[in-house]
Length: 280
Image (cartoon, rainbow, N blue to C red; front, side):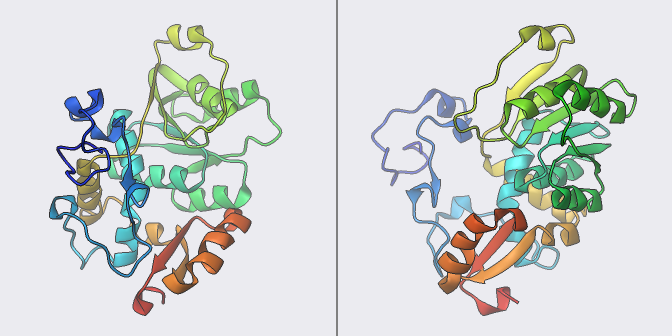
């Protein structure tokens, strides 16, 4: 992280990167996070962090387990900001996993209109539908069939205002771009490992579509998420349902990390806590 913001950073002697020079520290060349490359994270009873990183919230509205889930929602909130989502916009989400679901919550916080989630797993489609999305099963369909059927599901049958890829697969990226309306915006939220995608620039040019990407978050994303909860735009009861397990810290490896590796289709978010009262 940048030396001016974090004097204790392992990279404190490095010069400011281009992203930090313009205030976009989420795209820092030396990006590292608490618990991921910068300092030890939350797998402890207590931790020390600078006051400037703390954000107040109304504990009478937001319970502590839901507060813990604001971080992944902030990832999605930043994506909706990058994608310039406005109230009433129709939106397609490709991928109904954890980030796809938190993107639904971020969209609710932005007062988006119709939301459609494309997801092959039946249990994830069912959960997305219970949160108010229309769902689509791409299983066994060609790319062209998926795009044609999804466009028909858009409010005017002419494509979606916005699309967010939360899967990181060539087919989901192409589906998202192909399902957009004229001048629609596609935002990649997924982290791609080694996948590459064949690009057809005219698929973008002929309809003047926009393709962008979103990485991490900034502090204002957390603050705006908190305000959205406090205003009732993001339903607390729905967010609680993506916390599929709560595990005491002492059991974190066996019942948490290993369980997530072995049964990741059954879990969305696992909450670790050192306090028994938060496990109930």
